[in-house]
Image 1: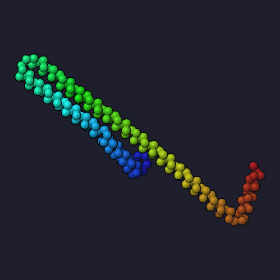
Image 2: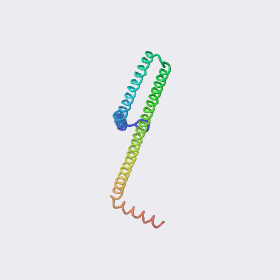
Image 3: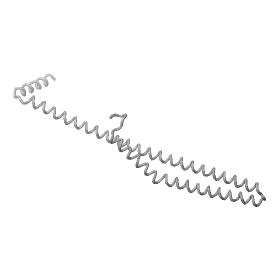
Image 4: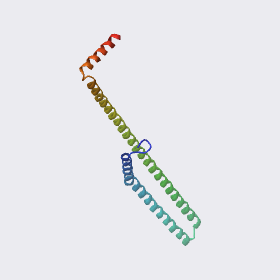
Length: 164
């Protein structure tokens, strides 16, 4: 197919290796990340619920209302900010690890392709050498089958040696 379009076998192995990579990432990376995000979301929800309860209690008590409300809002914003930072950090780390793994898979594929190319070139060279030997032996066999031709060829070689 050439350099622009991969062969079906290469395409098959690339798809297979990429699928295996995705399965590994799904099994070992995405599940823990989603679990961590879910746990963090639950803790944020619990913190928000406790902030809401504190808010209702402040309404009932009416003393120190604004101070407690401001603290709850600040804490909620802090928790949400931390959650966002943690989420972004986890997603960034997961993308980075996936990129590294993808690069490793691509490098392994390139190495395998290079080895296959070298092996193919070696095989072609061996075939060409074998064909050359067969052709030469058939030519010599044909030229030397006639005794007169043999003597003539030997005489030509002797004349060439004398000239050199």
